[in-house]
Length: 381
Image 1 (cartoon, one colour):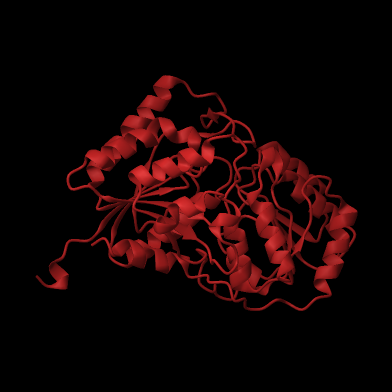
Image 2 (tube, rainbow, N blue to C red; image 1 turned 180 degrees about the vertical axis):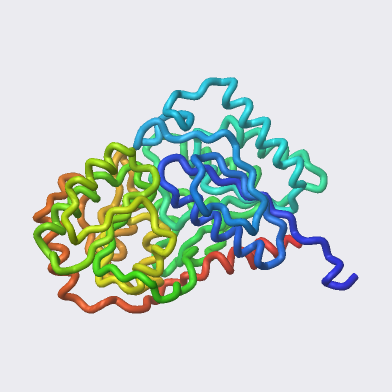
């Protein structure tokens, strides 16, 4: 049989974003890499729709969306903010299982779970059972970022290990072990060492030169928790770099009234928008980026070689972004500021220090995670 007659590898990729859009963006980049390598990819999403994700090169199945009820990820709500009931959850479960049957995948990738997304156990545990009973049985991977949210509740890590050992063929860690290793944020890594595969960070290729140039670019990820960062940046723009052109990207999930209020306070040197499709290109030309320390934003920054001030998201006991920001600051690739108690004075001082430094340029961190992941998954064929 010639290579041209081999059926394409069928991949089912499940991703649930609850607050920001980082998980969806990373999964979409991986899915596109798989599709460009000839795989037939079905991406099942469960969060609020985001324009452009996943791409048009995959089959997209959208479950009835749920979001986190609070910034601490406690509870689930529908897109109107109402708590979801049992009937809603069971409908989602059934739709997910039907998507699995229709896709008949050779490989299943589940983003975050079982390291995270415990709220989705109502549909993911039945999916694991369906995978186990399938004939032929597809290979199963979990797809996780390099830095995990550290668990405080007893037994959680042990449960994660048990699920991985019982059900999963591999753990795709989207990071560079020379930057941060999984055991730094997951204490039971030794129990799953035989399943771990580092892929490098999932980052975009170098974007083209932008057609529109801003000196300072401020971004708040998905926008659900970035209002204070945007407000503080507006205050800083009125005091420093007033001759520079500022772009403030609030994110699509910032409440409409907050956007209106912020726009009223913005000085003339600021352009306030919800989203810019050319965001990576804008970083390439910018003198400075001010942002949270989300996985995808940092990937964009490293590719662009842009100066960076990072204000990691830490509400609700979140630790992942703080670890990333601290590591980048240690390497001289960013200045890190605390989210709690951030003031205009603190931000102005950091802007002065950052602009006085040369641009970091290229880094030694492996940024080829999407292509590497595709190569790893295609070995199942």
